[in-house]
Amino acid sequence: MANVLWLQGGACSGNTMSFLNAEEPSACDLVTDFGMNILWHPSLGMELGDNLQQMLRDCVSGKIKLDIFVFEGTVVNAPNGTGEWNRFAGRPMKEWVRELADAADFVVAIGDCATWGGIPATAPNPTDSQGLQFLKRDHGGYLGKDFRAKSGLPVINIPGCPAHPDWVTQILVAVATGRAGDLSLDEFQRPKTFFQSFTQTGCTRNMHFAYKVSATEFGQRKGCLFYDLGCRGPMTHSPCNRILWNRVSSKTRAGMPCLGCTEPEFPFFDLAPGTVFKTQTMMGIPKDLPEGVNKKGYIKLTGAAKAAAPAWAEQDIFVV
Amino acid sequence: MDREATVSPEQTAADGELRKRLRGMLESGLETEVEPRAYDHDAVQSVVARLQALAPDDYEGKLRIAGFTLTPWRGEDEIEQACETCMYYVVHRRFCELPELMLPVEPEWSCRLWRI
Image 1 (tube, each protein chain N blue to C red):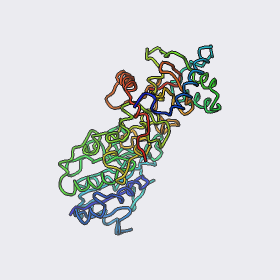
Image 2: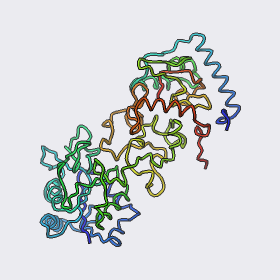
Image 3: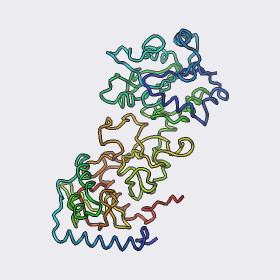
């Protein structure tokens, strides 16, 4: 039996909604099949008021063993570092976070806000928000870069806006069933099993990417969304086109550019006007090229690919 | 699939007629706004906004505002900017699919909205 506590800081509840929609395994499966005991969760928790405070204090003291502490949302430090703008169970949430993280065997950050600050931490960051162990790309965050949970692992980051429900439940199962040692984390502490490949991996538009055929409007089935509509699929690490959303589709499959929401810089360019859904270029060349590709190589590749493009690559081949 | 198979024979013929007409305008000395190049977002948006204000059949206006030339444009960085490498160019139809242009072109032509 693994005790799981889930708290929410500066957040929109999007990751809670995502988690409750999990299918493989589902939130119910965590309890019935994998032996998890959900001590408390913002949408599922039964305790209120004094009882909740007592339970949290018991987790901190060790009276209740805290196996997994899950945090959704940012750590809010405003105003003036007090955290008073986000109070919970009688005190600033940030104080609970510190003590519970120190008491837990594993700490899991769910969603961009908890991992790197996400949208709340976008400049000018009025809530003085941080992720648990990162602020955007800067290692540290609220808990500090040297933080380790009792298990010896740093915060396990599962980013996304929101994170895919099955990324959440599958990682929780791995941890709860004693397989945390099998998890390999990348430089941003994301499980490589989900975040080593790219969003583009498995995208149905890859042939259009290869032959440099661009989509020019949303919803077009023909064409790649990278060249004009700001898709970040080639530079973003996520399995969105391998583990489909609702088991059916993904943003790019539906004609919606990837926003790069599993990367620390999300939202990119601080949401400056004209930067969303538009590929940012300098002298006609994308500012952000597919990972590992340099400008010279990109230009050569584009010339060759367009010259070799077959006629069918320019058509909508997904006939209804 | 042959070279022209992406559109109907009628469309191909119409594209050819219009392409010939556009070439004629450029060869007869139509002055186009080749520079300044639309190298950043604001510049692109400025040019696009002006194109959006045109009637769909104002071909002269489209050529002029987009800065079309009959030959590739080469900047200080020696990168050749030609329709054939542009993201909006549909190779087999020889057509610019930028929604604000939608013009039959030739691979060696160029305009200041080029992006790769």
